[in-house]
Image: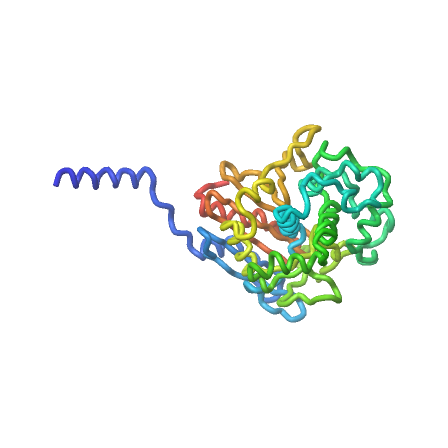
Length: 370
């Protein structure tokens, strides 16, 4: 009896020192998004996945100001640069198939590309160290003092042509880190050259259909339609107006994917369970690039970037994450794999910071104050 009592006392002491984490309620998460509750204003969709299971799925606000359709778990948002993780996955699948190699050069796929592209490899494109000129800067220079909605939309083939008209890279390949939408547009075209399929079809065949992401697509105006579509909005001083497409909204690879939180739960499960790519095959995507000219940095500070994923930790917690930002939309995918926690926020308004909101949710589970 004394032994049993002693064991019970010891267990009680252990529990006091290491108390079980409190159950996080839906109300606690919901309160973080209280400012987005509306039946007349655009808002966001929020997903929390814990230990492989969705534990919170909720929509706030409406898809657009014309129909006032409530946002729900099936609502499709343009995820902008969060598309890059899918583009990188396409390249990694082709590498796994033996159809390309990360150290193959740009001119292997595009022999007509000017000499400045010869040192650039697929790996440089994936981790933003290519030095390719920014096609958005080139486009702006071609249309000086022109409102964005009056600049013709540019497509992938036109981006490549613009890059081929340039005579020099911004810096030697591999020497610096600089975020490059140009690089990911080129990667999408490499997928097309190697696979013989359109980029959108390759995504469908190799990622979306196998994962049963039936609500997800690479949007191409005139070729397909977005189901359950949310429209983007610019919101200022309490007023919102629809601003859904820009001059660069038609490119693919750097953006262009529409998806819902329900489908992203399936993507998150595939990443967790290594359904498409094994843990070893994913390793390059989660390994931070080390430019030859010094540490990777941006105006915001030090950068850790792999293939389509940022890998800066969150405090002491391992993290793989990415944000998306385009006309009318903001998004974030925050994965803390060692904590078995994912938080995703997709917004169709510009006056919110999805990453800040997502990390406030993460803090509830991590039991931290930041």
